[in-house]
Length: 586
Image (tube, rainbow, N blue to C red; front, side, top):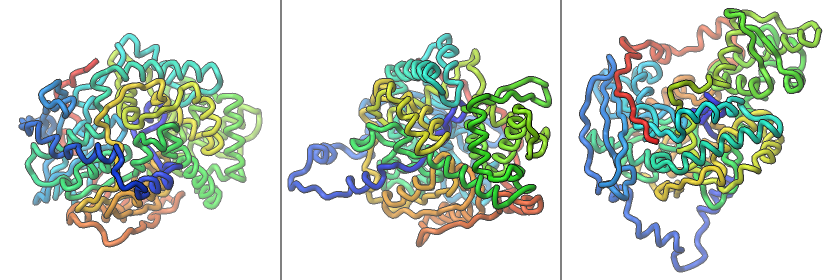
């Protein structure tokens, strides 16, 4: 889950209630008679039994890329009614390059990311070891990607609805009211859309299980990133005997994501803590910059990096900066929300410290000039200005165009159906004030991104959504990966999930950015070994930092491990999409 506009694909973190929830769910009953909930659970058929009522689909493969093959399957919109309405789900397979061990299902997160895109680009991010050993399969979640697309608004409504949402987060009464009206409009529309209210993570897990059965190639192996970790944890508990190996990287605490009696009265980010994780990463970058000094970190030229950062934010809050694109000559404005969104955007990368340095140095120079002073930081270069421009574009995104953009529809349909908030949208300005105290600047971005999930905004429900338990016994263990400085899915999410998932192991990584596979060679090796062998590590492990936060040119040249470098080569013919156009479902 990603925060602002185009940051809507990626996220989440640790719950402030995680310890409470773990204790509550583990507490023994004081009654000798089973509770109503327990009795209901006991009488429910297993997920396998439920899916046995749906015929296993036949996959009719066709060539869709130079290196892949595709198929579409029609699956029940509601698995309680297997003969009822269907939705088409897209599947893509990139075959193993060597002796095949099995099939590896993948999910990039979001909610809203395309699993078929991730599978098609396998050679760009999967290690050679895994490419040789596994067919890589992506199943686009229902409503998303090349599957039938969810669409909650009419095209003519989209431009006016999205306009107030182009701010990373709203500042001031007037903008907050406009933002809330737009969020309520799209959330209410999705609440009455049949596909949108059948897009819970549980339904995606069921679809993935049906495709696994259709492939007929043994138990499931899976790697999921960011929101994809919620899908992995959900599948492991819904189908505990059906998987061989599950890796979750950039891990969400599943109890924090799912609406439960203990947490659904709180905004989603107060449960997840993504804002706290981002602020923790930013503080660490500023501290590392101070320690490295100029010229490794040019922002260190200002003196105390933390004090200057606070002063710079305050100045931009008072007076937005107007800068110029060195290539086009066009002016662009960086206000407070845009500045925070740009910083959050570059913090997703493994080179987050140097990218943050480039942005802060650019803004500091412009802010000092705007006040008629002489900047201590170096004069901006074309390269640093391009870093800022790209980050600003990623933060605010492009305005809605003639082609319908269903990223908000997809994000809210999954997130809100799962989280089941009972909050009120009118209380979000008050939550904004709280977020600024507990997670300065970044808490606002994460809070408002899911404000459409307020209980009086999104009112759709999926009676078959999965809300736990998440501690079921599984014959095989899940491998959890957590990155210390992840700005989207804070490391504490991985730690808490390790306590919840039975038989799991945790690989901790002292690295930058969102997720760690393919960034840390230590993590990559641990994940590869687990996937190929199918056996969990004997114990948890920690992967140390492999390069300094602000490396020299020579250190940067040495930081890419050979096995990871091989992943960057594009396959011949990549990008020639021939998947059929998805059907839009209003």
